[in-house]
Length: 133
Image 1 (cartoon, rainbow, N blue to C red):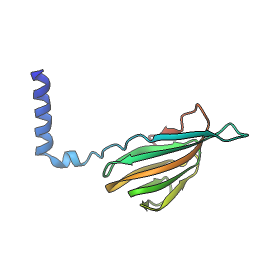
Image 2: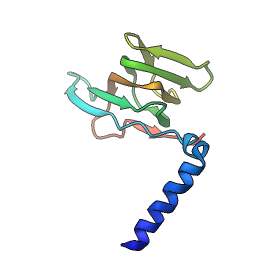
Image 3: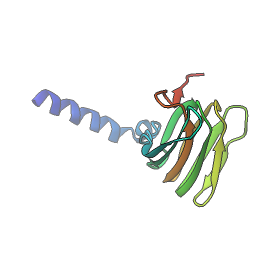
Image 4: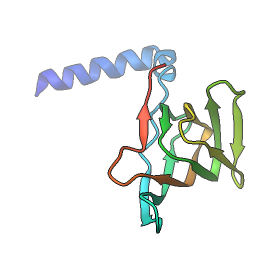
């Protein structure tokens, strides 16, 4: 127990002594909470809807989706970085669309953000595919 307490104190002291070190690591955004899924009649697809919360400056890792997506910003702002395009800042009350397979990163502004999204997917398949390059 004392070993774990000592390690915690050491890490906390190092972070306090080097605040730039702590600031360089952006917090991760929470996973999207799926609110509802419905079948799209006559297809092998389903429509999903979910909500995402981003702490200040939090970011979702670089990824692509297997289907199209539309996102509405409820609070704060999101910076959308789609490969091959300039960064776009989307503020509360605005929306953005992502085509299937658009490789992108989303990052919250300094006050964080909250979004609601709808997407089309194939039931049973992973929607987001994380990429390194």
